[in-house]
Image (cartoon, rainbow, N blue to C red):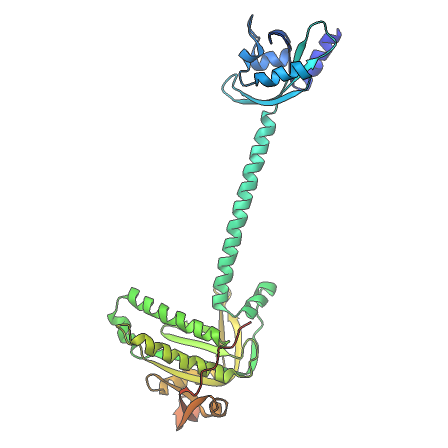
Length: 352
């Protein structure tokens, strides 16, 4: 077997097509088997640029003048499929006539794989961004259902341990005549009104370091002193209650529906925990909640009622007046006070 035949076989094995053209006119002198299979045999008189018009004539001229190698990528469609070739043109030295050696390597599969990898990377990045956005939405939702400290425990351990808090204070608000209003009003209007009012309440609660636990229809429940202990929990919920009524009074001046509310305060022990397995809800139970829930019934519209045991915690900052003993369902007789307004309005406590 001749050296030329061996070289031809080696080039075919590694998938390289080779053509040799005269430097003077770029006419073909030689082409191997892979070249013919990809592009067909050149016709008599055809030049390299006739065959591959996308090659840069200036670059080819530089190869002839300087001997530097010229590399490019060409897209060729010999049949139905477009193929991509890496082309390298170099000057052959030591011959009687200057010739250019043109090497063709089929890199179609490589480019397809690169394109697939790029597409996959783009898809992964897009999915990662979507997962991050979904994670943020879930986190915001859970933070609306439970305090941040409880959420962090739930996220870390997957469960929330019920906690007993010895002393917390609770504010419970309920609207007067809401049932009649909801029955006579378009549901969209009712929900819009409640959304505006409860959003304002949420801002007030946050300002005074309290936690909104839940809303039940038109009832609004918030607590101070849990999950983080707060020494002034009684005054915190009282300030929230005063601000709730003040907000409603101002809102009533410019809105067609006049909201009236009763507010009850409670103080004592409470248990906080996540309730449910599939639908997570953070809830609070215990005497403090029960007292606030019962006492809001005894409040006059736009007034605040609290147990007498809160009197000495509130008297320095609020106007309080005795209501006297009242029989409370399930609790027996209890001395109550009326909290009418704040003597001074302190700056809201920063919340960390």
